[in-house]
Image (cartoon, rainbow, N blue to C red; front, side, top):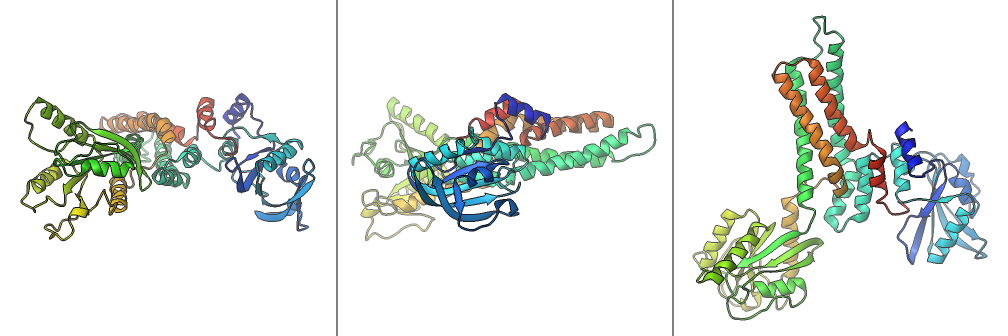
Length: 471
């Protein structure tokens, strides 16, 4: 462990050699609870309250093993069936011997178990301390450590997928590849500096440019991911649009699960716009109901159309609503406006509303459409799935970073990118290898800060203090 690690441990009042324990599963009654114990004396501490059914000596274990047995708690005067999962070596999550007790999920039982452990010299784990130990042991880098928090804090399947990919090393691997390539380039440049007075060239300028450009492009791609993740941090904005009396407000109410908008057979009832926060097929959405498309006949209508245009410009997805009982075919005003919308907005889908009124009518279009009835509920589930799929398709592969990594890494990635820009300019202007090497080293510093290869106490404090106890 490096000097910086020890300084951080001391500053946070952590003693890295302590045996620590905490509830690792959610608090509250459940079929099973998990009590996690980590440290060099974890097996001995658990053995004091756990009797295994087999006679195996835990100290002889070389690989992880599950033992069944009984939990003996003096305060309860009872023995309870419990399983102990033992990691005897540094192959555990924390990089040190670790034991997990899987016991009945009774809150008083968990409290007594922890009290018994604390009475045997184990101390309570602090927020994030298990993951901190994994980081200090080299089991995780900072990007992956933040992904653990991302998994815990995920609000929907999209955020969970992003965090799991980051935890699996998807982002770290890309960063590590760039860092490895730049380290190789820096080694070549600095080797040449040792022979600056001799006619020896370790790497020519064309090769320097090529390798620097590749690294810069890779970092630029990560910066694009950062920008996408920042833009995608809130709810997706889905706007319902269409001609007056197209059933937008009825559909809005149906998707919201309540009467939020005034519904009337009179065209033009919606004069403003309404919003509601909903979750459709697991995707958090801000749903917007807008006024119908019509020619502005007065100042009020003009203002209404201006507000509608503003909502369309801000939309992540537009749902164009056409009333099934009023649509007359490809030559209709509805079809004309739909085609016009397609030239202005890249993300829009076409639906036929009032599907309950279309029975017995001939279908007059063959486009990629779907029919819904807000009154009967037919097609609403399919529409929710379609909206979620369209939003996910738009940013497929773009959301690569957990939010906390975005906030911490943006500045360091930008610094790494800018340093390579300066390096390329220096190469083009004929500056010496010493200047190019200095800028390459600056770029490496930025990447190292993101990965946690170098770090400061305050950075670790910010990251790990946000964890809950037991993680």
